Image (tube, rainbow, N blue to C red; front, top):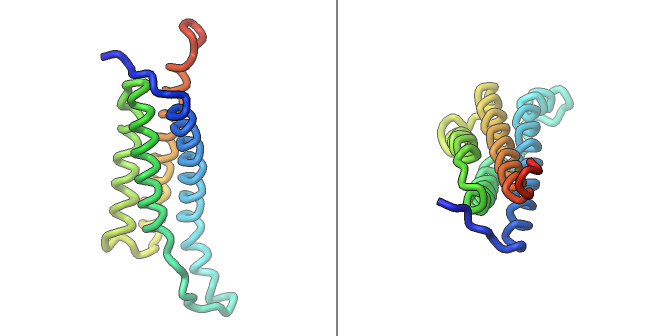
Length: 141
């Protein structure tokens, strides 16, 4: 089946979305890796248990909408499932660790969230590369 040539506006939207998704997923992975350390240091600083707003769940919803949208646009262009093979397990990890009993800010939670965030970032990167490769003239890849 031949790839569909999306409009220039759809291409820009997909590229911008992939760039935002790559960076946001990496920031999320750093957040998840450092949060247990920060929570452990709070009592030492005399701050005790702050009423911290948990942004994990809001970010997971944002990452899901952004990932599905940009990968759907990219798939229409390159017709390759590789990025989906990274996005779906990554989203499964972050959803399970944000909306189930696993959402406890333990070390295991942090490891799983970091892993999921890195998979989502890799999916955006791969989608970006696949879409870029399709946009190049023949023989330039």
